[in-house]
Length: 182
Image 1 (cartoon, helix red, strand yellow):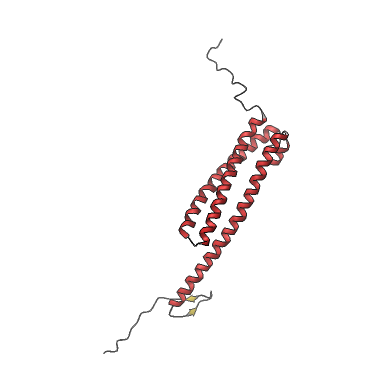
Image 2: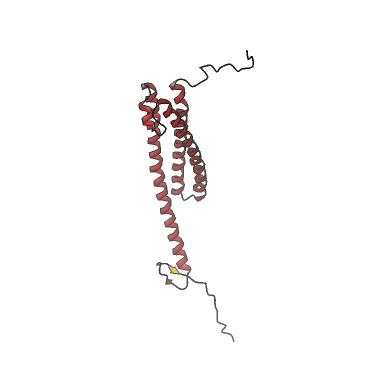
């Protein structure tokens, strides 16, 4: 008799029920939802920074947003893996969507997964929409600033000659003087 053999793991420690099997996926969806909510707040703050033309704040928020998006990418990879694992478990195949997986779950688990999926989907759409607004506002502000710079540049230009692109072409400033005393 082998007295050094490990005792078999208890059934409680193994994810034997669907409720245990779905838990990691639900946790990832909840974390993603929280991060998308934070991202939406950052987008609103960037919009306010554009409104105030606060470029330092805009850049800082952009860095925070990049970190948030990187974390969302990590969560998305983990979510895809958890969904694949659960899909195989419920017999839906490794490429099944959350909807396909949900349709094979008992009603209570289906309702939970559907609520998380639908809430996250709506939040993602709102982030996309708001992000597009901020992108458009940033482009307009950039064009406005470029126009101001062009106006200042043309006011300081001495040649007042237009290039093919329709902008005032400025070569090197020529500083000359005439000595009229001699």
